Each structure stands twice: as C-alpha cells, then as structure tokens.
Length: 278
Image 1 (cartoon, rainbow, N blue to C red):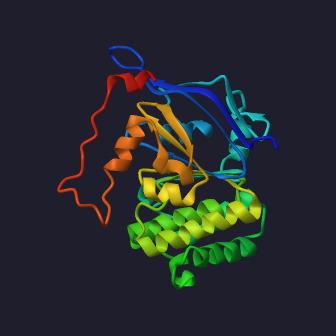
Image 2: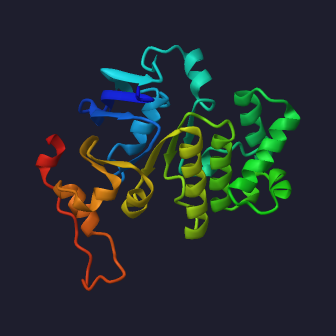
C-alpha cells in the first residue's frame, strides 16, 4: 500500500546573528493509515516537523527536503492554492493552545460550522447540524448552549475540545495533533483519544500525535519516533517502547514517576553531545 505521507531528509533552519540555526535536521519517515507518535522534550523539533507538512512556518524559516509528499502531491512545490485546498479538508492540524487558534470575535459553534461548510461543501443548516454533533462527540454538555459562546467564555479544556471538533468535522485524511489533550482531565482525555482512534479505524485516517507523554503515546499509537535536537534518534513500535535502546529514550523513560517507584528522587537526564549527530 502506498504511504499517505512520505518525508525524506526534512530540514528547517532559522537565520541568527551567528549563522543558520538548524531546528529540524534530516527527519525522515513515512505514514500510512495509522497512528504515529512523535515524542521528545520541548525544543526537539516535534511541532516544527508537524507544521512543515502544511508549510505553516514563520516567514524567516528555510524549509527543504528530498521528499515531502502527501497522497502523491509534492508539498514542497505545490502552489498556495493547492495547499489551501489541502489544509483543513484533507490535512487537519490541532494546536496545543486554543486561545491562540480560535477567533475571539466569532462564536465557537460558527467556527466549527464554517469548517464543515468550507471544507465539506455543505449547506449552512447541515454545517450547523454537523457542528452540534461534533460538539457532542467530544463530550461537551449542552452543545446548543456552547455553540453560541465566544472563546473567552469557555475553559481551556473546553476550548481544546472545540479545536479538536473543528479539525475533525471535515473528516480529514490526515490529522496532525500537537499536544491535543494537554489541557484535558484524564477522563475526557481518554474519550477524545477514543474519538481519534475511531476515525483512524473507521475512515482509515492517518494520525500524527505529538506529545511529551511517553506513557500516553505508547498506549495509544502504533509507532513512535523519538526526537532530540531536531533529529530522530530512535523509532520503535509503540508496544515495544519500554525496550528502547538509545540512551536519550532510556533516560526519558527512567524519569517517569511510577506508583510503585521506591526511588527517593527521579533521575536527571544527562545529555551526551554525541547524541546531536548520531
């Protein structure tokens, strides 16, 4: 089966007074109709990798790759019109903080309905019906009331669910989820993950799940990429993450607290400069 997404030698750099800073360095992977987790500490290049797929980068970023294709479309050479047609409709992006993504002067339900209307080509009445159904699907009580609220009137966790609903309502082929459950409590987190899991299984959607939570990724995803200093240092089947061999991955796993942990203190990760280059 042809992969949905193919990335080879992806690089992102930024100019600085002392020369280019390489934020993403030679990242390569392919994605089918599966759940791929990308983990690593802040600054490892996880989010930039996700944004690069949609070419949603700052104006001063330099993006290059030997291959960056989605379902046969070359994303590097694709004109803006083609990218706009893919964004939202076929490739969705859920960002970490809803207050920077939701339109503050537009009711949240109208924003979800707009996504259904523009990307799904449905009538205003059908878009409203789909928006309400999706609000209910992400476990929001009284969706009719929430539909009419403005972003400042909802909590952070509810705003995150509204963002997820907005990205899922067009039923994309690929969803890039950047810390999508970070603002949710454990119960709602599991419910949202169940929705994402259903879309992957039922619609054959591909999912890139970016997270700091190794336990969550290992239990939810099929494969895991571990990033450090802009590059992938290890790739494993999620069920086998505990058997990781790279010292960085081992250090991340050992720093996680456990209920039966008898250690007085969690270990501090000691970084080896050699990890940057392999």
